[in-house]
Length: 106
Image (cartoon, rainbow, N blue to C red; front, side, top):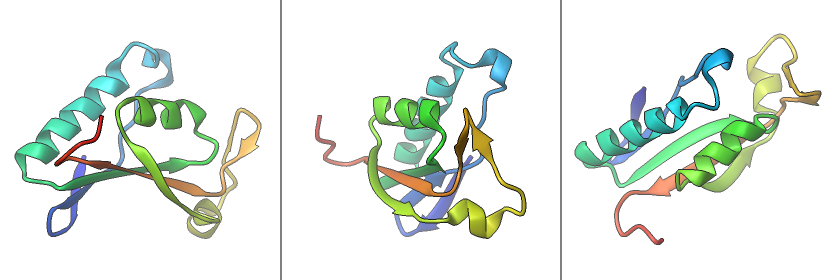
């Protein structure tokens, strides 16, 4: 889902692929469709965020062209009552990534 943050800036939020279907290219297709839609809407930048423990997602987003722009420290501690763990890593921080949609540098 795309959220219009301000002016010409959008964010991808709430995308997920069921675990049994991961690794089949579905996530990449969803990201590519979101990029196409953001461009169609005239977005200048597109952002996405994920947890510090979400290694496969970080890998996917960077492969799709997103670059890390910052860390929202303790985001998941502040916003979730229960602790989240992925592969034994506590999810604490939100990693923010951005893609410039105009004048993209390859």
